Image 1 (cartoon, helix red, strand yellow):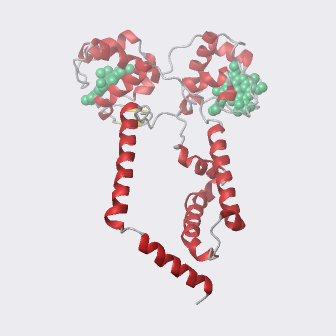
Image 2 (cartoon, rainbow, N blue to C red):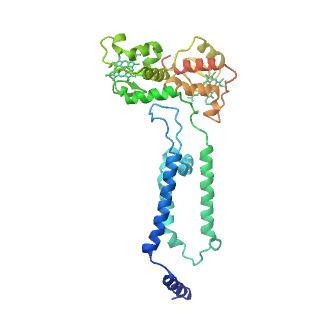
Image 3 (spheres, helix red, strand yellow):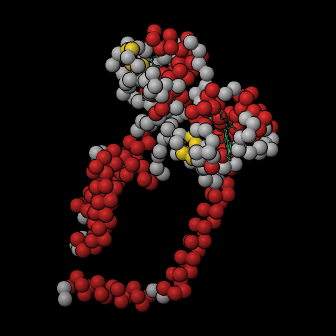
Length: 320
Ligand code: HEC
Ligand code: HEC
C-alpha cells in the first residue's frame, strides 16, 4: 500500500469518527433544500406563470420553431450538420458526451483535486462551457425562417372556436379535416363577410337542404368565426395589383410565362405561402431572409398597394 493511500485511509477514518450518520442528519438537510426549491417553483408558477403559445396549427406556415434555452446550443449544432447526418448530432454526440462523463472517474485517476493542477480536464471543461455559451448565443441571434406575423386576436379566437365546435369533422383547411363540407380555405375567399355571417346564423336560409348544422351562435362568436374565415382566403384584391406587379416585380419574378428568373417563380406562391408571409416579405425581405437580394418595398409602395399585391399573389395557386 502506498504512503499516499495509507494517508487517505487515515484521514477517512478520522473524518468518519467526527461525522454524523446519513440518516437522519443529511436526509434532514436534503428535505429542507427540497422544500425551499418547491416553494420557489410554486411562487414562480403562481406569480410569473408559464408562457402559452398559440393553439397548435398544422396548417400554419409562419411558425418559427425555437427550443427552450437549455437546448438552444443543440439547435445550433444541428445546423452544422447536413440533413442526413442530423442523427449524428442529435443522438451519437450526446451519447458520447454522457459516456465520457461516466468514464471520467476511470480516466482521471490522478491524486490532484485542485482545478489548476489538472490542466487537461480543466481545459476541456472550460472549452465546453465557452462552446456551449457561444452556441447558445448564436442560436438566439440566428435569423428566423419566417417573419414574425402579428396575429389578429379575433382570428386567433375564431380559430379556437373552430376547434371547439369541431367544424373540422366536415370541413378541411390546408388539407386537414373532413370531406362532408367544402374545403374552407378554397371557398371562403369568394364570400362576403355579410354572407358568411348570415350563413353562420342560419345555414338553411342561404343553402336550403344543407347538412351544415345551425349552431345557435352568439353575435360575438359569429364575428370571430367570420374573421377567421376571412383570414383563410387571402381577401379581395384590385385590378391594380397585377399592374403593380408588372411594374415592380417582373424584372425578377415570373408569373405564368411572363417575367424574369432572378427570383423564384411566383405562379403558385399562394399554395405554399400565406398572405401575411408574402406581405411581410414584400415590405422587407430581410425579416425572413437576411441574405435576401430582393429590394424592400415598404416606403416604395404604400401599405395598401403592398396589401393588394400580397392578396393577389396569395390567390395564385399555380393555375395560371
Ligand atoms: C355536419 C357537417 C358540417 C359541420 C359540422 C359544419 N359544416 Fe360548414 N358546411 C357543411 C356543408 C355540407 C356545406 C356546404 C353547403 C352550405 O353552403 O351550407 C357547408 C358550408 C360552409 C361554409 C360556406 C362555404 C362556401 O363558401 O360555400 C362555411 C363558411 C362553413 N360551412 C363553415 C363552417 C364552420 C365555421 C363550422 C363550425 C362552426 C361548420 N361549417 C360546421 C357542413 C358542415
Ligand atoms: C431585383 C430582383 C427582384 C425584384 C425586383 C423583386 N424580387 Fe422578389 N425575390 C427576389 C429574389 C432573388 C428572391 C429569393 C430570395 C431572396 O433573395 O430574397 C425573391 C423572393 C420573393 C418572395 C418570397 C418567395 C418565398 O417563397 O419565400 C416573394 C413573395 C417576392 N419575392 C415577391 C416580390 C414582389 C411582390 C416584388 C415586387 C413588388 C418583388 N418580389 C420584386 C428578387 C426580386
